[in-house]
Image (cartoon, rainbow, N blue to C red; front, side, top):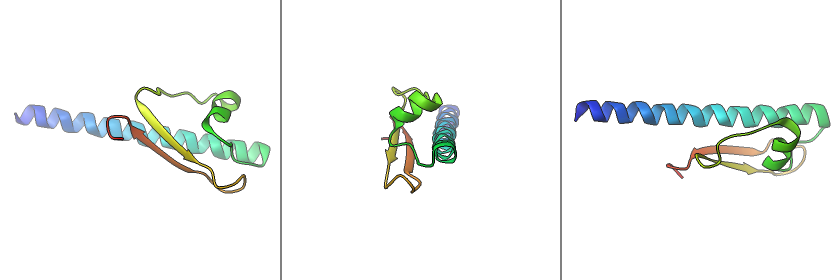
Length: 83
């Protein structure tokens, strides 16, 4: 039982780390767009098309809330198991 509990904890930690890494990737893409084009991307599709963003949409849910072209969007990534 202890082994399975420890294994489950490791898997959850890896999932959380992957979410953090994906969130950082999306933020870097948004900042790159702002630096090059003078505005933050209007949506994820724009980043996919223009900046090559890709991720497993069956595993992760990315929330990308835009407040305006000159404000950093609110970006949250969750594992679909958590959402």
